[in-house]
Length: 225
Length: 224
Image 1 (tube, one colour):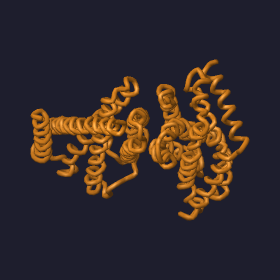
Image 2: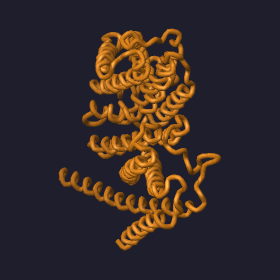
Image 3: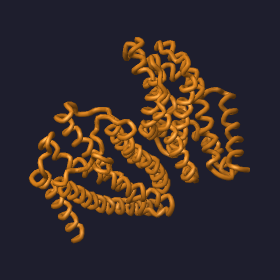
């Protein structure tokens, strides 16, 4: 219990500090001005979402391999948390885009494939509700999760294959890209904060899923006896 | 017997089953025709507009048709539990998938080739001289649709509301195929035709990635 409270407090405090730093510590961007400050929030959420999906992918693989239900719990947990972060990305993006591009949404490859990724994980969560038997549900959703995750590199590659309106990658985007040195501490701090927050969400949701599974077993035992 | 000879035998069975009734092909062709005709009501199908929107609509029609056509490929085996017999008969379960992918690709390709002249006539699109390029695009696109679709049909066949579930799982997964195939087809059907090899490369990558994934994980999809 104490561990949960500490993790929760640390996560919330870090996210608030990152928010403060992005508004008051990070330097103002030359062309976009204060508008650019959403970048710290938008990109750190995107990275946290992708990390959650990556952990989910690993647990899907482990489930197929080891057939331990803890991997199934972790898989669904990560999918839900990843969907939550990607939802934030899909909302914070248009908030930035309206003043910067003049439109909320453009059907460019990167935006579209992030949207598709989000839809795929929504389908994953939906699939889980449509298979009754727990072992079958775990296996089928793990396999679908693996196929859906294959979409992730396509999302990342799309910006390079069909270069469109989305800003070219700032981090790891090749020569002439990169973050101004003054922005780096805030950016990496925001990424760290969002990851710790993600970890807190995952640990809470995992505990919930474990409990739900135990209740399901008890229900079945009560029905048979 | 190797995987390929197993797959060839099963492909023969799939094709024979279909050509005895021709149910799947005829319904799919009529479905695509209906969709293409309905699309023409949503915008003015004059030449310039058709060049811009036509190929995308055509591929969308193929995608919708595929999401219906792929439904029975595993459901059909459930009726008399023939999937268990198939699993016992082959040395590697991947052969079952290869056969079903082969058959679905063939049926989809046939539908596309039959619909191409109809589409070209209705939307006043000229594809003369571009047939080899279009064939290549149709083949790679259909292979990608069939590979991902066969895998997901095996998943949805084991769930409730399977008729609704398959399009739901499949269509977002096929979005990259739709984008790439449309890009290439637009290039080939434009007034000044160009072959967009980038799109072809993308389709090849998609096909190889999903075939490999199915080769690695396919056997778990068919577990009892």
